[in-house]
Figure 1 (tube, one colour):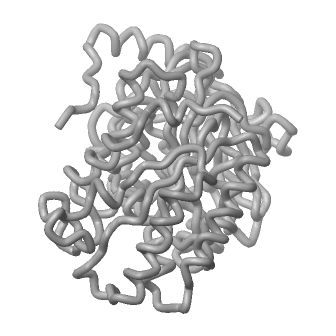
Figure 2 (cartoon, rainbow, N blue to C red; figure 1 turned 180 degrees about the horizontal axis):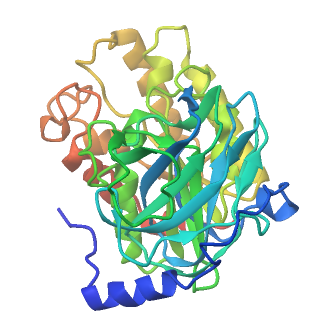
Length: 410
């Protein structure tokens, strides 16, 4: 198993120095909240991290969130996207910082810098809206843990975020966003709150990104927490050392998600524009979803699922994006398995392999299934529930992807 790239101490110091050049005097009074200028709602650069938004409990007043995310593409002019997509009232964030993780909630000294919004230190995001920060000068490396710290002075009502982060982040009371220390970040959370994307401006012109649209397997369920072993993470490590213009990887998986029906998050069809097509620099959509539709016993047929795939392809192509697709993996032994669901899976996979309607195909079914029982996941890749791959299975999925197929244009 190939470990994540290590960064030498000297190089880290140079990167940190570039990242930390002062943006504003910390003793200056906070500016008024921004009014969402046009640039705040437009994407730019290339997405280096993302996570699908969903409803996430209740917002809390005077709460701090120190959120740990892992970059894929490196670059300058970092921007973060904040989401109030599921809120029922405006959300004010009066302090937002970004820095590099040292250990736990502690930051590498000097890397933590304030983000602004239309030049203001605070921003109010209307209910249902998204907002991008201003670009932050300096470089952010690939394959490092970036920490985005937020403070909500008066949040209430439904919060927006990503529930299954497979990453430990931190909570605090009061505004400690500017601090490097972990002292006031005493509670942990396994979710990402209000933050749904990070972008950078790569140094090389023409650099693009791939967005993985999927369910719990893409979300990383049953991979090892805090080690970035979801299959899109392994894919990002491969792309980082490959001769390709695709460097950014956005993981838009939601555990339990379906192509056709809302439930565990909005369906892939309903969230396609917000979670996928709106991300900056996207060249290819990688579609790996459908097992939850067919195993739910709601009467979904192969024709229904194929129609959903076709709509995703049509909308992505209309937006100028390529669509790569993966076959649906085996799940015999899972509690919802039955011959009827398996028949739908086989019909859908035949369509994927033979239709010619996608720009690229990766056969995840063949990667995962046992040669002795093709309806079952290979035990070596099975985490134990007969549906979700373990870390080795996640890496096998990423290794099966033809990297050249992601470097696609329409």
